Image 1: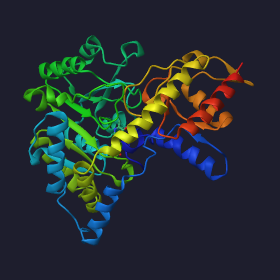
Image 2: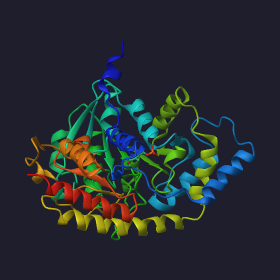
Image 3: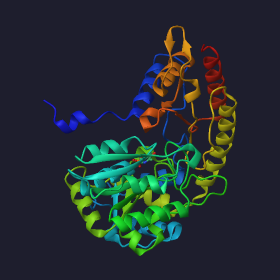
Length: 396
Ligand SMILES: *Cc1c(COP(=O)(O)O)cnc(C)c1O
């Protein structure tokens, strides 16, 4: 018999679509995937070499649970240099990916009776991590016409005595949009006034376009920093999804609790990957610029093509590697006898009929949209868009 907790949880829907697409591919079907949530670039060689060296040097044993000092120091340096925030070692924890850091946070601060505010559309794991810790996700809708930025009055209306935290994600997965300083100031003010935590997932910090600059909410002042847990990692910035290194920076008391929790679950993150992560943070950073040029080209192409498709409209994303077009005008049309009335119907139709994989917006809490990742070659993007167009033309 499964626990009540286990019954509440669904598998990550983005991984589910990806796995269906992969199994179609494995059976010989030529599927074009806009479903992936990871850079299609290989991890830079200097980082791989640091891992090889770590292995050869015999750096293959358990390390300190919350990460080696050299890595914590590299993270501290990064947070100071890039974000203008100072931390001490006891305020840093390295985990097995940013998702794991977020999970440790959830275990350390959410509990029965707590409410956690999640602006929607949201990244798929936030609600389930809240549910896994017997707390209640409180969704606050954001709108395309506001560039998916949380409205202050909507936030205000969602705050209760039970509010424990808000989870922010800028640049955002799935919308690709970013919060500016003014919007962050409003949220920080509310958090201080009503005494709740800010969990700030900044994993896409390095992937910004059109001159947009990243602001970490923790940089808005000492008081705000004391209420904020910043989450970041190397998966997206350094094409290191498989290495499983992420980290969090926050108040020592919370980081200590997270470290205890980690000590009873995974122990330290992989020793070899930690050495690689030191190189990723301290070595040359030109890789990121090269990756960005490529992403930017694909972004412009994909967004302009999506806007040409009848029934679709796509806001221009300024970060991450996702386009999030509005597809609600397509709903109601049908193929043979089947009516397409949701993002899920549309995603399944496109997978079956166009052999194109993408993620239904419903997975992110907004059924009026679909998410396309452009972490795939320009050539694939071109072919994929053509197929989507053809398949949509077949709808009545
Ligand atoms: C990819 C992603 C993560 C997880 O990153 P890992 O370090 O690979 O665990 C966290 N948050 C968001 C929004 C992501 O898209």
